[in-house]
Length: 258
Image (cartoon, rainbow, N blue to C red; front, side, top):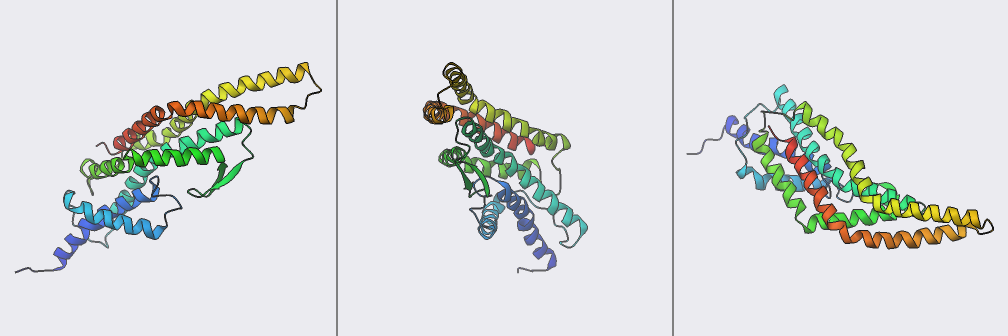
């Protein structure tokens, strides 16, 4: 005979509630799912569905009174773990946005700006192109499945009510901001070097023939040559994307290393 009392109900709630907060925090900050294009209602429903699917494959959850101080501490811990893991992957997409912003500013496309619907900020058209391309590559290469796999493994590495992300790992996450900017510079470096040579050439032409209108001559030249450079850079786009994606997933897995 099945006896349902408060202890049994508390165990059922705990087995679903604690994973839900970590998964919900992850979907709050993760790329693709954490953008403004996905409403908060859809993210909550998606987090509930993923939690219900994953609960049978997760380790046993601690049974704690839902109204105790310990439960509030666990909720805060799970939210922080999920947000930290999602933020580590958010850096991957943003480095391509920053790289596109740098290239666009150097090739006279800084004035061609549009509102990024995923973040709600104004970026250059080239940054939006990079963001859409990287998102498609990330999904086509099953990057969304890889990050969910790392999320599942985090429940074994950092069990609920047990270990928390160490201070060194949080400092490593904060320091990865420099990795984002350095990787964006590495992505944009060929275009920057090429466009700098074009700028020097235009300066020499202007010096030799001051009667030429540098604005009428420079903008079309920079724009056409910049588009040609982008076309050439796309030949080696996938290897760079693969490298940066591996580094971002390694950081995400490193954060939940006990």
